[in-house]
Length: 445
Image 1 (tube, helix red, strand yellow):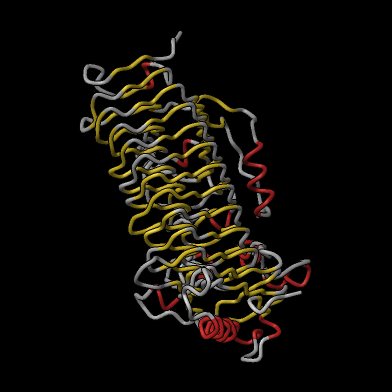
Image 2 (cartoon, rainbow, N blue to C red):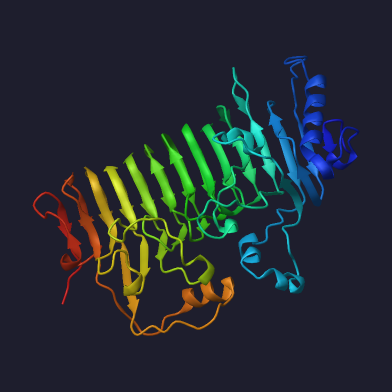
């Protein structure tokens, strides 16, 4: 038996959820607030509510504005399917596809964002000032679909990753938010939160977005775990700034993001047990970061194999480093790092790639990492366009005719000193001032 604090969007008396679910949810929120006004009656307060979205397609023309705590919005399936693959298949072939659009409990974002105003393009805007912070808002098990990207003069409009739309935008400080089991697709910004505390972003499928998860402002004690995600070449898969105690663990992050993990001003946080795949350098970037742990991750960098996307990259040269660290007292320990790239794809031509680069700071600790750098001798390109799946899986599994690629496994710039580099590469693969850094190399022949 559903209680009075359980709402089904298809069984509400205001609006039509199929033509504008935003109007319906805002009306439900108004009803919740009208019934839950007392903060303390017999040690009872405002319990919040559950808003249920059954499987189906729901257009959103009105932004949902959330300003209450203890709210769960849940659906019956994240409904993800690749829009990028569909848009890069000739339209005359669409009739032969089993599925065309994402499904499940799917919200189609029809908003028209104002220029230079991220908030206006947010499907869900969460904001409440004052004390206490808004708490325990949950998004679970439905799909937010931005539908299309727009033309910016940079090739196919559906490959630009630009449309001004955001799935979930949390503008004010919050506590104990949960984003779980969501499918988020074709948005310039998937999830953006300011000033997060005890946030959980867990077990979502966030992909084909300009940026996937962005933690802005400042924050503490949060986690991004067990997600499948991958941003576009313009943005970040995971971005955090001014954060302490952030856990990034057990994620499988797909290629094409400008960066996989980008920390700015992040302290005493962990990046552990993830699988990261990128087509570009700058996979993990630390700017002004201190006392962070990067351990037991698998990094793979190779070349974009799918023809429709081979004309794009993140603009970084191959000496930038797959792991690029500006900061002090960070630990990079026991990671497996694979770089497999053909010489003709290095940027600029003839450059020596860098795997781990310490740019500035002191007392960083780099130890017991296994770096495998290879290239393919006499590689022959396949003729014709293969499917995205076949191209990427074929590239991942290709082990034929691999030969060693000459790299700087560890490069330490002059602005970085007093670092410790142990058992990560041979001395011939290290570029540093050995007088101002501690180095113990792998024995060479």
